[in-house]
Length: 404
Ligand SMILES: Cc1cc2nc3c(=O)[nH]c(=O)nc-3n(C[C@H](O)[C@H](O)[C@H](O)COP(=O)(O)OP(=O)(O)OC[C@H]3O[C@@H](n4cnc5c(N)ncnc54)[C@H](O)[C@@H]3O)c2cc1C
Image (cartoon, rainbow, N blue to C red; front, side, top):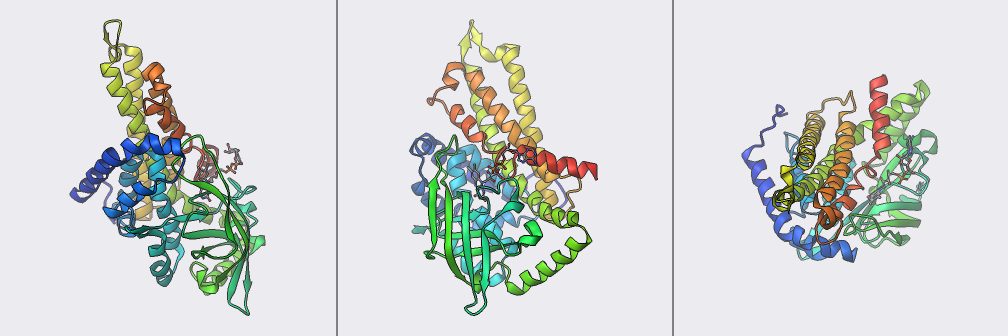
């Protein structure tokens, strides 16, 4: 595993600059239009697929970067371009990670390519865990998966909500309860293959921000899937459940903590998205402050404006450093003893909300209109303190780690 360094290597710099070019030339100019349309930006995803940004190869390359910085660098640039379009591009990757992390080699080889399709026939994937009564409280999940031994099939029933790409995805990864006694340790993940009867899209949500990203309910009614669609396989699940039952007898806390560790590793990626949005709004505000003249001088010459920009720049850098540290720790297999993954997500998401609000203030009336992008960026930024664990949940995780 690589030593921790803040210096990107030549390959990483090249990828960053390539993504920046796509974000600046393709995503930015299209951002306002897709925000208004509130639709999945298929043409932009196709364009990303054509040049290899929307592909399993690209995502896997960043995911397995030995320094741990591949994903945060990529996320920052894409979300700098536009958060809604970027989530439409990386949403599939979030589902693919579920398969890469828990699937067998055969499952990875079969399903992940179908999540992306190819440049001429682009497909999406969705990760469906949240439910109407199980948001922060994942253990309250109700969607059940029951094994039909005679047919070697699993039968899924329940309603998922808030699924990014839910209902329009080719492949859905669905988390369901297989043993209700074990809380979140009694959950398992399943692949629902394309066109499986019984899976349908429920309500599509109209959102405050990231409006180019499709978010919807997914209804599962007697969805029958082959036994081989259980991620990791039945043998591994049975072993895991047996171990969890043993541990539950010893004391529930250990079971809970193991589940938390998985989230710790994925949260820095959301932190990196927040850094991208914050940096985008800061750059617009900085440019504006240098050129907008009031009282005979650029507004940046007022300390009241300049100090805001100084704080914004400092907070963005601090957020990035927390994200990079946590991403490196996840890749290097370092234990998150102080919940460093949650820290990075908590701080970066709060910074994004604050910085985008300050950017509106610095642009004055213009900042409040849709003529300038900071209004959209502020709406987009509000998601970061909510999904992948709210700020309150991050504080809960961090304070539990401190109290140990
Ligand atoms: C745009 C969008 C996309 C999403 N994409 C996906 C996806 O692809 N797949 C998926 O599975 N999910 C997805 N989610 C769901 C997301 O992860 C949940 O919304 C999130 O976990 C919060 O759950 P909730 O909305 O039910 O809020 P709740 O859990 O009901 O929380 C409501 C409020 O109560 C607070 N709260 C709850 N419990 C506590 C506590 N113990 N202490 C203090 N405060 C508490 C929360 O912090 C929050 O402020 C998405 C959500 C959105 C909005």
